[in-house]
Length: 69
Image 1 (cartoon, rainbow, N blue to C red):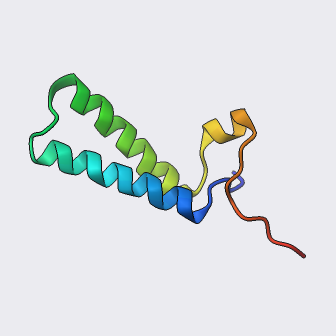
Image 2: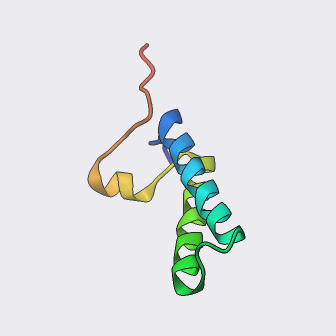
C-alpha cells in the first residue's frame, strides 16, 4: 500500500476519533449512534496509523506530500 494521507489529515482523524470516544465515555452519545460512531472512530485510527485511506484511492485523492528528487 502506498501512503496517501498527509500529516494534517492523520491528525484531524485522530482528533475526531478522540472526540467520539470522549462523547461515548461521558455518556453524551449512546445506543446505535454510539456504536456506529465508535466504528468510524476505529477506522479513522487504523487509517491514520497506516497512512492509507482506501476511499482516497477510489476518488483519486492524495494528501501526502510528494518528495522531490
